[in-house]
Image 1 (cartoon, helix red, strand yellow):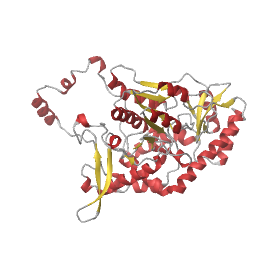
Image 2 (spheres, rainbow, N blue to C red):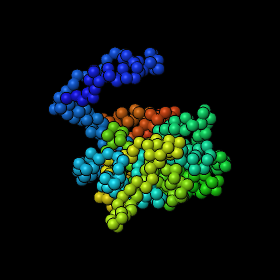
Image 3 (cartoon, rainbow, N blue to C red):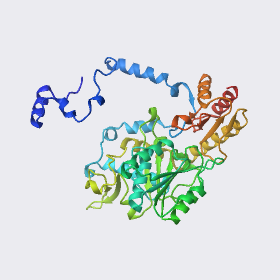
Image 4 (cartoon, one colour):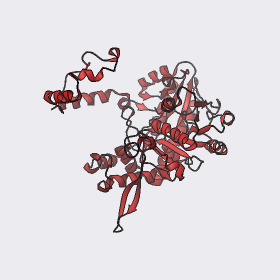
Length: 453
């Protein structure tokens, strides 16, 4: 059964009320050349059983179902125990919407509070918000926040930042700068793959709001973020760390420990499936300073007591435009990623501190094993010599990365991610990512297949 909110009589009453004859008149301001005319190219409807069978068939055709995947580049396949989904499917969680009335949404607000506590510990910063849409938009929101706090316009971003995050950040800021170029890119040191600190130092100045760098960066390199943060602090510039793979913090120092003022990360690896690239989950935390907290996007949940002394949960800060005057709002983000944030909360609690560390150690060990093996294969070479966590770049000498990846599918592997798909001019480099899901046998067979290819 289709849901049709208005019948024809209802529509005519509404059109008459606003003074137009037909629905098309509502779109008069849109040029005719931009309007779609004709029927959508959609297949005929199916009943539920047919549709489920069709979707199952499509799923079986995907590379993720058929191949052992070493793809990463911002999305990572970690094991998520079935208990996570079972808890999410509880009706009080699965059907809950954003807590407009926290006093009657105590379970939801408590879950947000627990999530914030975990993310604060993970990122090493005392204040974490209720989550953002994904890491790309969280990165852009962090840059906007830095501009508001410092009242400066220029933002320096490392070339090692994920290309998609760079593009989203540029898009967010371009609407504010009226054509001025206020986002500047800092190059990498070719040998190490880390941000060029000398180039960064030459660009820093009193008009810079923030320095944005990956930790680790897009190429998997562990950046010298403590040095980046120290250089920024000397100029009154905010240091923003960006992490696509937060399991790295199981073996690396947290952004807060390295001096980050604001830290953002992608939460997808911590508890949700890949699902063709979404949904993501943006993690966002900052130092405990009033000037920073007041400019945070989104909302904060807090713990308090009621008049009888019983524990209760409240929205401590809501700075979006639905809650306060639009000109005072820090962001137009509508809500937090409630269900995804809950999945991360449950999974992190199930893992615990020691389990989290074991996953990170397994990722690191597997990646190091592959790096050593790939370095010995003729025709392949590691692009950078800097330290990595679970991802690294490989250069092919006799064929393009796309050709190698295609040939590896014949051996049952999705070999990695061709970085030329992100708009670069390098066609011979691909990224390889390792997680705890890769067994020793998988790693050995992968190396054997690479030698044959």
